[in-house]
Image 1 (cartoon, rainbow, N blue to C red):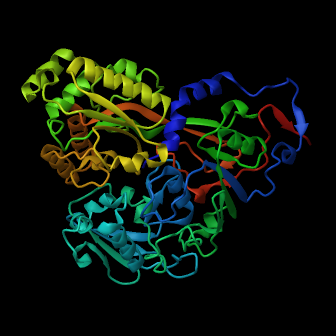
Image 2: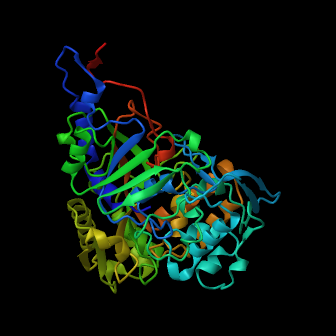
Image 3: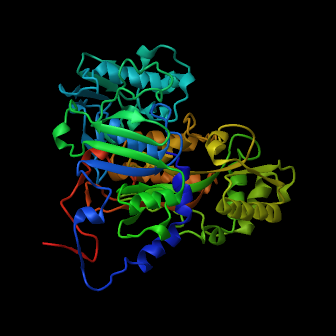
Length: 543
């Protein structure tokens, strides 16, 4: 999922991490005796939570959404067949009461919970899943995550407009509670993928509604929106939610902050007990809530690969080999040599870490472009940030000086940048991608020929074959095949990894239960609750 706000925050994380280590809360020596309500003036009810997210236009229609802050909100208002475990991110049965997998592992049959309800009390039916998924696949909708559904029989052809008949897509509502899904090939990770919000059901009244911001949407999660505007969203517990007894909070207020100072003030006043996004660390009176953890996320540049000469992997590899990698990655706390952050069981993949001018020159000669002769102009499309300018300059100088390319830099405002990557003529773009489920496929599916997330327009039969092969495998064998696919991306110069993203949150996990650092930086609201009275560090409660 795209997250330019977290990209900006990540630029500061080296400094912020140092601040966490070197700037403890001042302790005057003698414990101060105060009542808890004085220390946390913003907390009046222990069943109400206020959080602060960096401001941007929130898209509540999950068929159109791709920002991380929206995904967090969706954990409150939407729910699919499975949901994320708050600590391990393993798939937890949600609306799926039980399921069966056919012997050939190509067909999943789900039984929906009898007590599953929308916020208006209407039962959640198998048809609500089918209708929602098919609507997301409609070609004219251009849903960011529609290619996730390609594991389903017929979905790829339907979303690409090749097949017009929705009956040819392997999604069948047998009766009100039985949903059958036929896959195009076995996919052992399917339950993990179903945790993603794009696989949620939609109430029939919302299917054709173009703008979900006009009135609170009919939802089916543990909470429902009761009011919303550009400054905040207020949600209350949904009493007819099937698992409402597990939900501790009665009210959640999400405030959208314009500045880092505003976020810090909300924390200092005690009004907001979780800050996600831009925040002024130096302004925090209490820094004990600073949480920095590694995410399943990578910032990278990519080379568009559909036009000559960049459709030749020798040219792309040569471009990668002349870059000053040590200097490019030197500013980051977690420099990335690979696209996928190393996860348990995933084989080690070797990326490009050093320059090699001799090999680069030989590759260019083999490709028919000695000394850059006959090369087209390279356009590097950047965001308006100091770090992007630094990296872009290093890349431009290397390609000019070593390969003789003509290089031009374009700067596009943040609010238009990611859309611009799907448009116009440019050669180099950048992105920060957070895996949407805890599996390497969350990254690798982006580079498939028909993926609508494939901004590089990469098309490689060998890569396609490896991804397809992995679909027929499980366990370590599958992960080894996926690692081969990643190695191909790196060795053929499609993706140029820069750093792994740390996630920055301000949250007191001694005060707020159910919030755990995890690789997706997803924290389902369902599991959050306040713990009993607890003093600030260095402060004792009076008797």
